[in-house]
Image 1 (tube, rainbow, N blue to C red):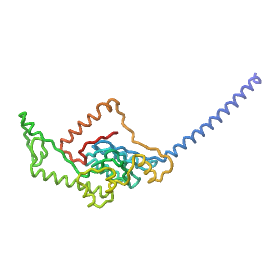
Image 2: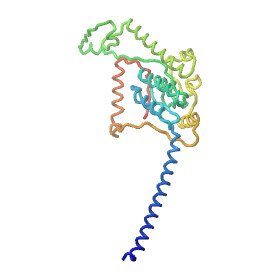
Image 3: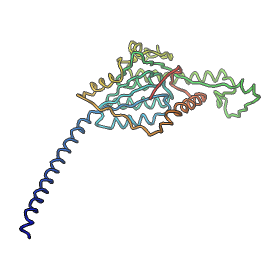
Image 4: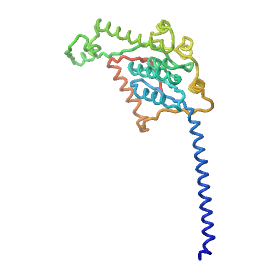
Length: 302
């Protein structure tokens, strides 16, 4: 009986060895094939979008820190399309960008609009590249108040405020601002504007006097900005990618790495997000916030 089964056993043994050998060979080939892409993935450029009104710095600063600590990411592009926003958030992102430039090259790629606080951030980058028609500049500070005194009088509503100090209700919507209050606000705005001027002067390595000449809130095209030194080069996003490769000494193809986006419903994005954001922004602007923001019409996209 054993004699009859022996050839079958031998065949099965040979077949098993062949399968084992083939499987091992395939595993080696696959491991090598996976190693190859991972080596090429070492050439990465991080891209951080900054879109819309700047109201919070945490997300952007966290992304800067993450990309800065990732050894595979050789350079970082800030893709900016924003009219600016809050003073504090703009300054926080500026500081983190300056810190990042000590480790990796940072390129600011300006989209259709990079004004006020958004330019404040861009000025911290190693290089700024803009389209010829990009709207940029607007170096200055803005504070808005709403007054409803006449409306309240017409509908017979009287507001009474009890305060502990003369300036506690400064900017109240139900009365005119006094001369002393206006002087105090102007002194505040002048100090914050000077902080903006200093930041641009340091970030762009420009004489402070030269920045002061244009720090009156005026807006420039990308081409005009290049002529006065606010922008280094003219070009689009792909030009910014090529420049980042060159500055980081990257040869060949690169992988662009974007921050992970939070999942949101399509219906919310399509119908409600822009509307709600607009309402919140208008409410915020009635509270007398101090902002590095261009107050002109603008269109930005994610």
